Length: 161
Image (cartoon, rainbow, N blue to C red; front, side, top):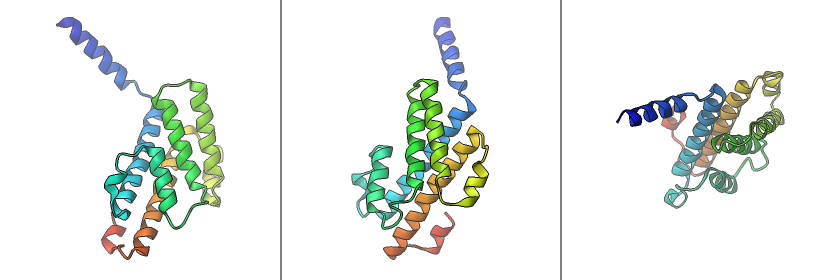
């Protein structure tokens, strides 16, 4: 039994040794995916048909469905965040993750909002990840509001959720 306890303790410690950057990427990705899921649940008439879609498929479906924002650079931020998350989750080479992080930073800088560009000048990795999650979730929330308004289903209560 002691052998199993030692294995458990070693495994538990390995799980706790996750880097701050990795945790931030996973949390930002989770937050954006939660926003994608909420969009699907609130705006689709039969969301059960797409509930189990993968992240990338949810992006494609929402992008096809949303009446605005098709050309928005925000999509690239969401896509690049997903690519970075996949690199980290599948424990690929650190160089590949660094490359994906740089691509994410470039996608953020391409957004036509001057205040974001200023904030990202010389930003560290953690700030890039935080902004990616913020931009991704915020953009999907705006699309959700626009779709619900066009459907006549937007309410004041939704404003505060």
